[in-house]
Image (cartoon, rainbow, N blue to C red; front, top):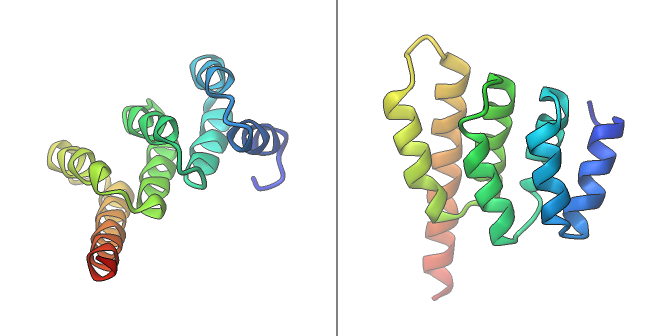
Length: 120
């Protein structure tokens, strides 16, 4: 998918922090568009990006959910951990990929927390 039209558009909008347009892409776009946006939001440090990623945890397409979880792990923000813990506690056990991805992202957030503690 990298290099797709959706990916390029999402990358451009995230870099320019065009949150209104990103919101419209998420609202009106298909699963491929939402997947591209979820991927790019992992590279942004803005609070709006975090909020959009958290909302994508409830996306109807599991691929989008997986990418949102990965992006939250990449960002390493402690605030996301509670959402991920809540998600995994209510997730059916047969959703193995999503379970594994959530555990991995929580681990990444824990590592980032420890690194931040060491800096203080």
